[in-house]
Every structure is written in structure tokens, then in C-alpha cells.
Length: 276
Image 1: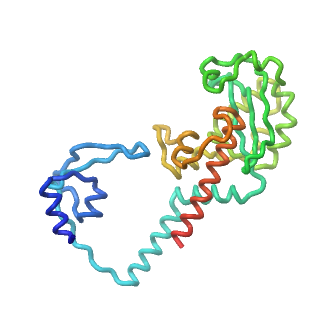
Image 2 (image 1 turned 90 degrees about the vertical axis):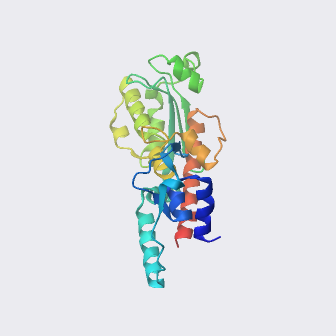
């Protein structure tokens, strides 16, 4: 069906379309006074409007481009894609997978506030091998709301070591490594708060080389909230990744983070092949 025939069909029914569909399918655009008749949200929470095709006007016909122009367009498109935040984030994920000194860290805590502490810490490599899994006895009680999430109670922690006792082991698995964390800002803050509560030197925490998997995920998959971020569970859902260990456990979430990075690395390889 030619363009004019397609336009005639949809004009007859006065259908509604987004700007993208109008341009791509019908070479039309909203007129000067056209307004969306309704708004929708895409899978990333961004809104877009749809327009009555009767309120739209034809665009200029496409001019046939020469082979040289098409070649230049492809080159410019490749440059644009490779300089995009999404491509750079995918490249970073792929580079992380190629490194042999990356560890993944996750924690469970007594809560979210400035006086809360870590009660469980998990460190794995990107293959999912567990390097450290330890519950900790805090000096403050576990907030009931936090306990409802991770299922760890005060009673379960009474005979666990405190942060000071496991600090040497923690240093051994983290120092000299690239530490990948989903929401690095939060976990580093809680590490500092816990170290401070037990009189540990925070210098080693400040010296850690960290990468935040949450912001990589937001750049690749798109943010899903007003903070401009995406959750670990949301990232897994978008990628079709499933928990292989208990969710909301430190090791379980660390392994899930590693799986997300692995999926991003595969996406990078697929996208690079398409661009090439």
C-alpha cells in the first residue's frame, strides 16, 4: 500500500498516533495548533502524547539520498551511538567482565538512617563464587521495617562477630580490587557508619575503587523513578534475569548484580556486532 493510500485509511477512521509513528509510517506531523488527545507512559515511565491524524499535516517527501550520503549518515550514526551514555555504560559493563580483579559487594543493614549499621555483608566475584559471607552484630537494634525486608532479627545476631572482628578479612577481599556495588553510595555510607561505630579506621574504605552498577543500569535500561535510577529487581525484570539465591540476602543480591553485569556485557557484544 502506497503512502497516500495508508493516509486515506487512517484519516477515514481519524486514528490517533504518537509523533514517532506519524513520522515513520505516514510522513505526517502535528499541525501548528494540534494538541495531544491523550498521554501514555512507556516502559521507562516517560510520558508521550498521541494526536488525531486529522489534526496533522503532511511532511515534505523524502528525498532519495546518494550512496555517499547514506555512507556518511551511517558513519555519523555510528559515532552518535558510540558516544551515547547507553553505549558507554554497556562498554563499561563489558570491560568489567573482562577484568580479573572485580568483586561484587552487597550489604543488609539495620535501616537506612545516619546511625544505622551493616548486619550482613556478602562479597562475590563476577562468576558468582562467594568470597565472603558474614552476618554481623550491630551496636544498634534492627529497625522492624528493615527486618521485614531482609528477614534478619536482633536475636539472630546476638552471637555473630562485630565489624571490628571481621575487618581484616574484609580488607583482604576488597583492597586492590574494583568493587562493584548496586547503589554504591548507600553501601559505602553504611560501611563508613559501621566502621565509625566500632572505632575502625575509615581510610581503607575511602581508598576503595568502586563502580556503581545502579547508574550503569539506569543509563542502559532507563530510569524508573524520579531519582533517575532503577532498582536491582527492576533491572533483572527488564533483562529476564532471575534470582538464583535468596533475594534480599547480601550474597544473593551480589550474585544477582553480577548476573545483571553479565547480561549487559552480552548486550554490548550484540550491539557492537549490529553497528559493525
